Length: 95
Image (cartoon, rainbow, N blue to C red; front, side, top):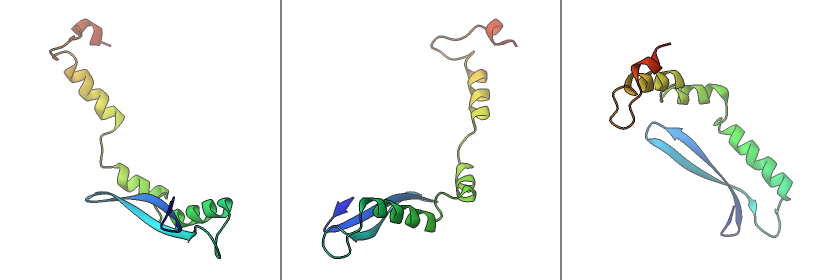
């Protein structure tokens, strides 16, 4: 992203208060210090890796906040029989 004569790298960080967008400068958009697009992308990847946003441990810590697919499926099967719109017959749910 180019803004005010600089090339920026933007990424999001999960915080207890929600997601926070972080913006960091990579290089000037023109003139002395301008990097090629390939080097800009490499530098952006280095910045993101240095912030430890994409590490497996960070992702595992943050992903525990929601419900799992198994929990959602169990809730669905419990409530599908008694829902108002298009309830499913009990014989269909027996497995």
